Image (tube, rainbow, N blue to C red; front, side):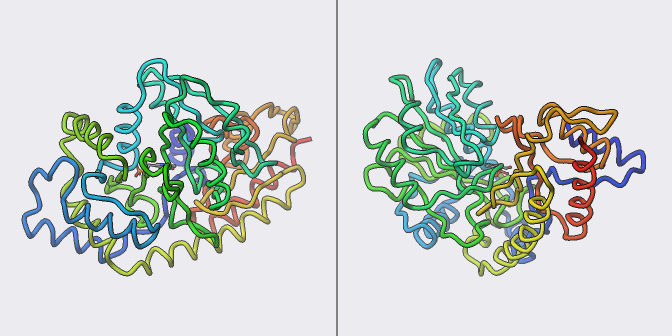
Length: 380
Ligand code: PLP
């Protein structure tokens, strides 16, 4: 909705600062584009195997070993049309009507929508800025019931940028060890967008690996959002169920994108690392700039490319004509008065915060920060 309103303003000639988008503002690296062209010339223009080309599965297996020290077999890998379809396949395969899925908030909204689509029940565990937006083992255990079937989280997290350390994941794994029927979906799509800490996967803990669904893809780390390609690493039985769904939904992911993805995984990661360096510089500008505004509380993101400030201290205040009572109001206020587009935290199950993407040029961010500051300072 914000995107639509933003487009309408832009069409009227207003200089809009759009900080709403969840995608890198970089072009796909040239060697990946060339690999796609070559694939088309080589004739990779026909139906691919439903779960993905064996060569791509092998490249994913090699990547999971290289980056994550995880061991997988080809029948435990499946390639889909974006991490979003990976999540859809997994959630629809796992959740039966009435099953409960524990989701720490804030969360990426697709998780809850897919659980609802599968007629499951979302059990939200609120996490806030004071716990760096991470679920604790105690709060996780308190949410478990005999109906709990699934736990879904992302690390690095969209929208908070929180990254779980190995110790924090181990503490959660210890809880799951007591509940063998719970499957864990670990969304690691922002793996490469990490500002210092090592990326850790909850699949690394022995005993847990066989009920973890690792979700990853090419959209964020390789600036390939439009190619629509993601993958899962999961127990073979689950992959088999997802294969059945996928064979009816799509017949498999785009063959050309799959061939190019082999190159993405095997080639030098320098373009991805350069992109992350740029995100880091922007983070180092935007976080202090927002923090400097009186009344804004912000937790430093350790990964992904979002600032997620808590703006609840402004609720109840007015600029004389508009009163801001919640996060939705704040998003509308910033859109109409500052022409800055953010996304209300309510879209992620958090009523206190607003999300600004810093996958935007430094000039855009500077102008955005200036306008946000002016608009917030006008609220009394
Ligand atoms: N998971 C998270 C946390 C995301 O933010 C996104 C995209 O915004 C996705 C998954 C989906 O990625 P894809 O483009 O591969 O479908």
